Image 1 (cartoon, rainbow over the protein chains, first blue to last red):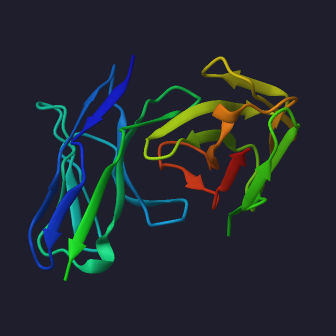
Image 2 (image 1 turned 120 degrees about the vertical axis):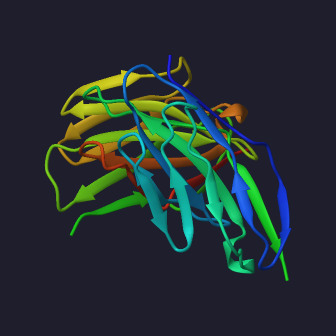
Length: 113
Length: 111
C-alpha cells in the first residue's frame, strides 16, 4: 500500500540556517504530494503541494520538488526563522475517489534565535 | 468561501462514558470527509472517511464509529471511551487532488 517516510526529528537549527526535511514515498500510480505544518496547539495547515512529477510547490519561502525517479519530496527553506518552529508532515494522496491522505510521522523543527 | 467547524475544542471524559464529536462544512457540496487522530508525539492516523451521505469506510478496527447523517456533517462517536482513545482528533474535507482543509481539532483526554 501507499506509505510516506520522513526523517525523524527533532531538527534544531539556528535562525537563518538552511533547512532540509527529507521525505520519500511508496505509491502505486501517480500520487499528489503535500507538506502540512502544525503550529503548537493548532490543527494542520497546507504548506505546499505538487500534483505531478517535476512540479515544484512553494509557499512562505519553503519549496519542495516532486521527484518521481527518487520517489522523494524533500522540504527546503533557505533561511529559517524562529516562527517556523512547528511540526511538518509530508503526505500523499492517491487518485482513487476517496483521495485519502497518508501522512508521514512528522518532523519537529525547533529554530533558536 | 468554504469553512469547516469542529467542536468542542477540548474535552475531558471519564473512562466508559460516551463520546460525540461533530464536524460541519460550509460553502461546498458533496465533499469527502475524514476523521484523523493524532496521539501524543505521533503522526496522524486516518480513522474514517466518507464519500457520501451514509457511506462510511473504517481504516482501523477500534472503539469508535462514524456517521454522516447529512451531506456536510460528520460525527465521530463512541459508546464507551477507553484511556487509549485520548488524543487530538481532526476533521477534514476534500474535493479532489488539491489537498485537505482541516478543522481546528478536538483535544480529548480520557481520565
